Image (cartoon, rainbow, N blue to C red; front, top):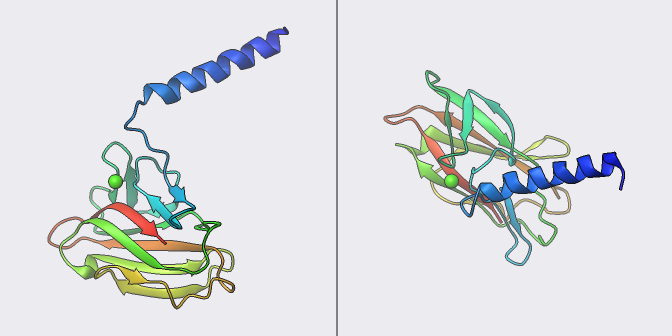
Length: 160
Ligand SMILES: [Ca+2]
């Protein structure tokens, strides 16, 4: 056994210990369920968020919200491309906000970055059924947050 191997072994052990010590509450996000054909991000980490502007992922509480002092901002998801998809279904957000205009969503082709839907006020589940899965095999969602009566927080985002 070489010294290098031992070091790598300890490093791996340290990594595993770090992962295990997070306990059952840690959910690797986003979660892709190939059987259900869903892509879900619960924001328990920032792995599903590609970029932020004026917003922040608060992993401990599992939400995305405006940075303190900001009245607007946005974030973009990583590429959404669940292999089991035959067709795009819906975009669904959960969280707290005071009016549909506080949360506006756009859907882009993650490869060409062309907008394929929106921006629209989020007023309940958005159908993605009109989006051609052949022309647009990978999508990304851009969520724009605007402070209303309350500061909006998105607690999860699901695409099917
Ligand atoms: Ca959450």
